[in-house]
Length: 54
Image (tube, rainbow, N blue to C red; front, side, top):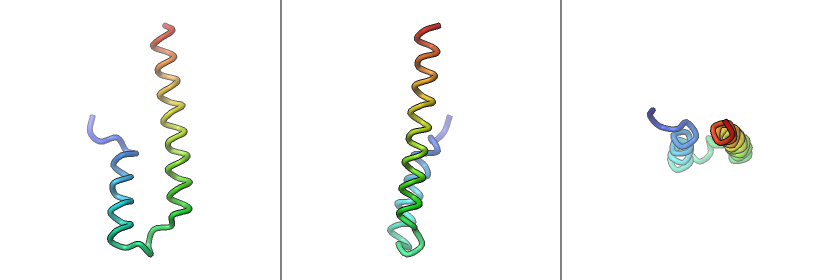
């Protein structure tokens, strides 16, 4: 299946932060990571509940 998009994007953000720190808005990046983590957890929880209770 290839790289998980959250992991791949995290690596790219860290690389951009080291190469050009002035180009990375940490507040926007933090909100983005937080919302994606919540979405990933809710999706994983939904799939887990579906396969556990079916």
